[in-house]
View: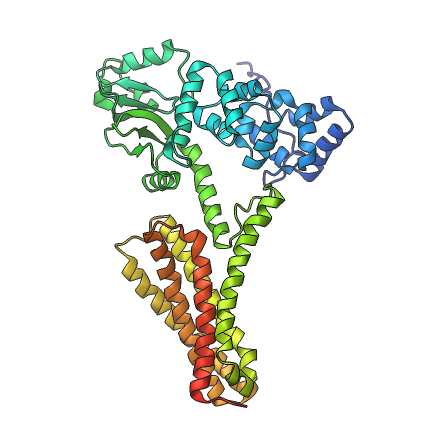
Length: 469
């Protein structure tokens, strides 16, 4: 037998010089593209950018200084499809969208699923939105207008309307013929929704099941009846939790009457989980969106607001110190040691607060286990307080040879750690009960309590103990 020669297969791999091993665009590649744009060599810039994945093109624009983005966009205009805009950072996308005509935005939106099109249009001014919607096809316009009618960060905004739904009385063969005979149907799906005559979802059928099932078998006999339905007004964070809890790939979205109106897929949820986790972390620090592409003026305003709030809480804590001026004057060493007590309490409170806010965000902490959580954090705080109090007490004695001072600072450390542990639980839980985002407001209250109690416990105990120089 003669040896078969296999034909060479051309691969579409990207040159290794574009991405590093962490899949980030290399600085020298970004510089080469920008140099080509700056030199007016649009053809060279386009040749460099063309092999990139849409997500990497979006990254390229995010890495480009704001003043150079318009020139880069002009150089690679034909590569800026809707899939690139869908991957872009919000602030970068807004900059580029502002430079486009309404009909150009409409062309981009028409290339995308409804959820991605909405993400592009929703942040535009009302006049610009209307102009873009007028330029869309009637079907696309109706779908996007319906999505915009739902609240921001709700399932209605997040869902896509492009899905496959078939009646329960069809056979597998009927469904296959339907899929093959209608070119206008969406091409990106992995399961089919089965609906009753009122268009209410009663089950799902995976494509793999259909391919392995004889044509004459009824869809109702092979479909999976258990499904997780998402109300159209559910918050996107709760949607993400459901996907995570039930390991969903996609889920049907239903209106108030229980009718199927759209679906949400796991690729959208990955973005939501990342956004929500980042938001909670940044809110705890009062850093706003924390986006490096956010306009400086907006960043300054957000951070300054929280810094003013923190200034107010610092004044509250300092007023407590003012109550013990006489004690501090008679024993100046107290002024040296009191920041240690308040600082350690603040650190302990922040640790507990981070755990509790995360537990609330992921639904690990509910009314069923709140009491147990409080008891758990009390025991942790007491244990840490005893150990830290012993350490600081011994250290103080070694340095200052004053047993009374050592006892006072050890007792204050234990007291403030317990306060920090309890406030780290009670503050966010209480705020959550009143429908106030604990990630936004908790840190201010916890810090105020630990600073105030740190100073009060240490200086108060020192006064009661009669410490003096």
